[in-house]
Image (cartoon, rainbow, N blue to C red):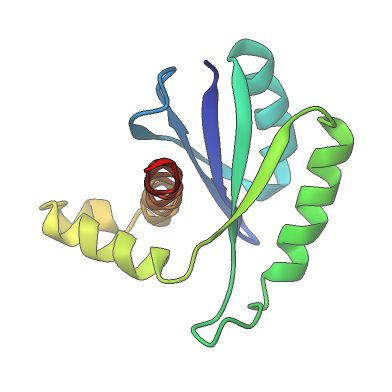
Length: 141
């Protein structure tokens, strides 16, 4: 079984998370500058067995696309061109940033460490991936 990789795509930074090889646990992987994302993914996929990529689908609370949706769609198109055999799934990412900040605070992360904006991006990617894993599990029941 290969890993599932999740992407919380941002204009400046992108948070990444990945499952273990059994696809049970979502773990933080990295935050990379979005301009370097494709190179990072190419290197990572060459080293690791990734069977699926889950991309956060940015929506507003009323279910309309957010302003970031056009950038995400452009990225997904380029990704599919580079990795045509890779399964790509879009997954609702509403409220993940808020949940990430709450998780960071409740986790006791010091104020100085919370200034690292990349931390919220990584935690958001983990939340997207964990939500996706739970959806898969629920649909199998």
